[in-house]
Length: 213
Image 1 (cartoon, rainbow, N blue to C red):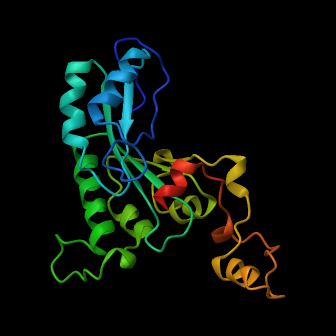
Image 2 (image 1 turned 135 degrees about the vertical axis):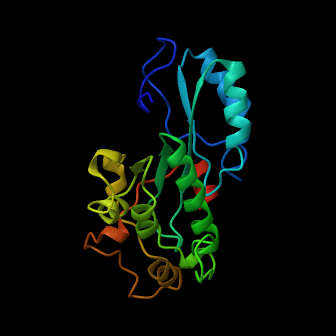
């Protein structure tokens, strides 16, 4: 099977690997077909659809790709179950990867693997994505956009299938919610933290991304 990063029909080598369709609520408005049509207009040979915590648009995306002449890369973007900054994009390489992507999406939604006898399904916040990704990594390529998520996956998944997608802006220090509340109340405790703990790193996000948090 060809590499995930091979181009299609000899066209542009660049392939967007993190695109959202209208199944990513409050983040995007275009249908999977519209995204593919635009990719074709731009001369892109490949496009990844990575909706947030869902694979609802993947079948439509794959079918429409045949008509639009763009190679589809199936995937999903996983948000942190506890609401912390940092996301992981999982991209499918083969049929094993697609099966594992579906399994990871189920774990993210339910908190456990519904295909495993006796599994606890305690809800989304109970999901351990790093552990689940390590267990169901076959056929998937992971992109980590935050130092914390990168460190969590390092050593758990094959290094050849793990890529850092972290920009320098991702190292901006985030002021915690309780400190922000204290600041609004005029408390003297409201001082931004100076230590750069990994779970406090967050890149500035544009208005579209803020709507999704």
